[in-house]
Length: 192
Image 1 (cartoon, rainbow, N blue to C red):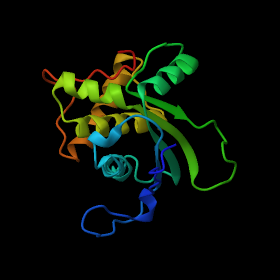
Image 2: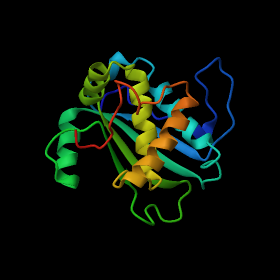
Image 3: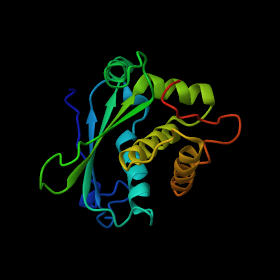
Image 4: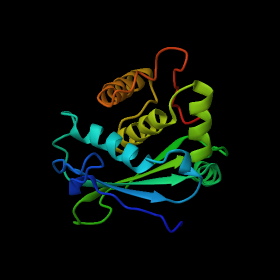
């Protein structure tokens, strides 16, 4: 792991804007820099934190029990290997979510929701191909991954509609346009 690996916690009330502390939330977030050249997004940790904070502060999730999520910034090779091993799909994808097994960590608080792994090359390529801001795409994928850890899915049309609607509302709170309309519509099926 690179020496600049960092770990952040939303529950600590840290703010990257003007030193003003924000109130603690139920979600503790660890960000790991595993692989890939994420330097094109200089503020990537703050982007990830703000996306997670937007979801955690949404009224539908704000009373969730304390939980922890690890977000791993990785590369296509690593994500391809994980996608092949755990999903039987021998190709990279933009984001993978791995829910923690039931009872993982025992009685420890906060409980672990699981891990999110992002593939740098795929995230950058998709943003470029779709003509969207890489920062917005990263935040969308973080929200998408968190919703998977909260047991939302898009396997059926009805489930996809519910999950996409939540994503659109949470992203709007960050000033990000609906990624599911227009020419830059983002299909997040993990099978691209």
